Length: 244
Image (cartoon, rainbow, N blue to C red):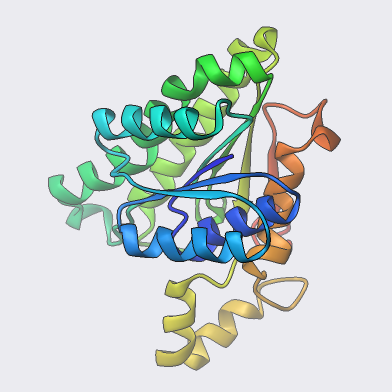
């Protein structure tokens, strides 16, 4: 199992949930120290893990990461595209630099990894899960145009890959999560009232747990239990976006 952006937050939660199901995990991310900590935690649970530094915007680093994963484990059963740089702000204030960082890390990073992993996933009849965002489904979050637009491109890529790769036995799905990421943690500390208002919009009344709620939802999509599920988006957001 290869998880990008696995050094913290949702990516780390997914990596830990996959390990809990017995999967060996390749934890990839821009900051080696962070993904090493994730890999160390996985090993304490009795599961093998490999930590690799990778900037998903660079095709050469993506290819090297996939090659290293296959060299270590010999096969690849799952890919989770979670890595994403985020730039927020009004449409008129979006800069070329922010647009490129967001688009290249989200859409291109997912595309590069899917292409690089395709041969191994075809051989293993594996699965891909790409992460989306509930901000793309809501009409009350100004300033999210760049991030939401990028994530919707990823969901479109997900559907097209599911259509094209079904004949190869590869399933491709998306998950829209709501988890207590480091960003949300900071928000809850610096603007507790705003944060509470945010939580009040979640029908289940709480932000998702990274491993137990979001991670296990993604683990399901990767598992044989979801063998007949492809081209879909699983909402793991406590009902916040879909039920609005």
